[in-house]
Image 1 (cartoon, one colour):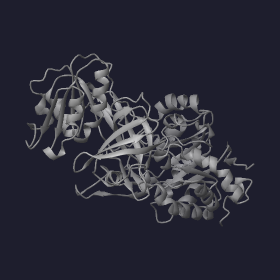
Image 2 (image 1 turned 135 degrees about the vertical axis):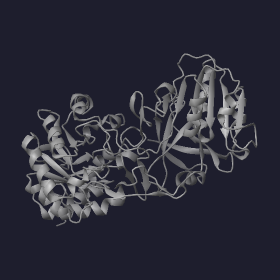
Image 3 (image 1 turned 90 degrees about the horizontal axis):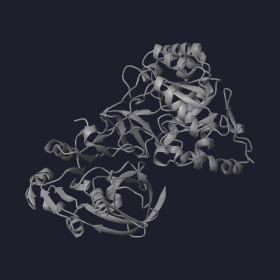
Length: 241
Length: 303
């Protein structure tokens, strides 16, 4: 457990917040890994994907969906948080690929930002599709563009960018590998839309987040996997749908 | 110097702190956080005759000062556990463990316990007759005195280690269940398993848990488990492991004063992987503050 201090909180949309934390975060943290956060007054920790890592600095993005995230959104600069770090497998970026495509939906987008940076470090120039419900939900379009990447934004209601689900942005794109994270219906749609291989990051309600309680197990073609331990990232070829 | 050593039916332990079954896997995950050899022992994940996936997810829901789980006894089956997990445990845990066994028939319990014969790093067997999350078994055994007595008696015929029966709180009178286990020859009792509960997602108008109900654990249930340990201590002569919502060294002392000879820590391990380490470190000073030099002095001290 590590104590982090809130360095900054930015409200990105009406319900989505970016939190910059200062503390001992390992620079070896892999994109797609998560931290599990203790929140005063609540029993279970709250798992959140790592959005960015710099030296002694961790960025998290969360949407207010329940009691835990509501309390986090009201925290102040200088407040401290108790985190379990280095959780989950994260994305494997040492796979055979040339033209990776990143597809994120809603709060599934944050881990793709850190992933994009890591891919760029390795010499890739990933294409990015960000999916939202409506214009008011859009965040991090500029941050991805500032990395020098081709970013397509899709909104289900057509109020901004391409009209449709994130999969609408896949048409006409030339890619040979997929990294994706988002709500399960979106992951399923991505899975069905393309034959291309890839890595899919899943969500589940967790007890511990480090593999002890078996609260988040799913079935895969390679046996039972704990989303918190052998996941949250699964290979496309092992997913059972 | 405070003496924390306790003895459970011949199993010598450096201290009375034992992570509870289902909250510690087979120890490997927590061993990454600290050297788990400081523990008295630990209870392994509930194991059945056959491999089980368990219940569909969501299996976890939060509650005030606690949580519900409906894992449904996910485990790789006794044969796999004996051949793999119990062998691998020796790499990071040098002491005997407590093997937790579940079943859906007397025959299944007996099968599993027989498989544990001669396994040298199992110091004690805990028979779970109280899993609230599986149909046609588990808790059904633990709510019927004649079944408890029968399972206990049959398991003891094949066991080569002390056998403790883990009781369910979801009964009218837990003392009667305790007496049935004692009559069947149990060496001791684990008191209690989780309490049945549920939560509803008000936006979806559906239960949060896919299994609808689950077992309630965490600090919320501490007063309930404490009372049941107190009650069982009065009813039987065999030793008790107290379980239920223990989160601090002071809780351990309360539990022992109620009658527990050792104490299991459950869901606190999940939210703080260092929970047992912190409790073990704090126990001596909490005992000294009470002028207690040997922890065994306090067992049943509240009666």
